[in-house]
Length: 146
Image (cartoon, rainbow, N blue to C red; front, side, top):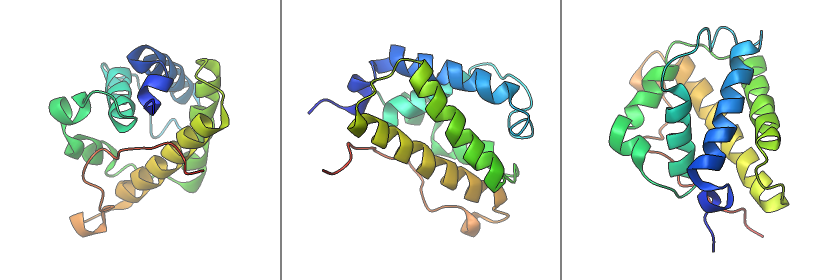
């Protein structure tokens, strides 16, 4: 079976998604506290993370390591409103990026961003390592079960 990474169009498709998404969050007043300014390499790192999670190359783990994403979210204190807006903008960006619109793929994308935003939110409120979400590696996302 084709991986989610291949179905999305590989790095090219995922980079298009992440670039559109990043532009959206930077301009969004609800997410201003989470994304206050454009950071170099952020789109690239988002692309690496999604690519690896969807069955593509393991660059995120090799180049940055999962601790990078934990550290990036610590102290942000992401609200439920911000988490929901993040998910909404991500799904809008997937549509605008021209990613495949078939239901199984879109279900996988939705579940991926919902899970990831919940992990990020939990980690953003953690004051100790014990309060962090137990996930310590890039999750391997799969096609939804029929």
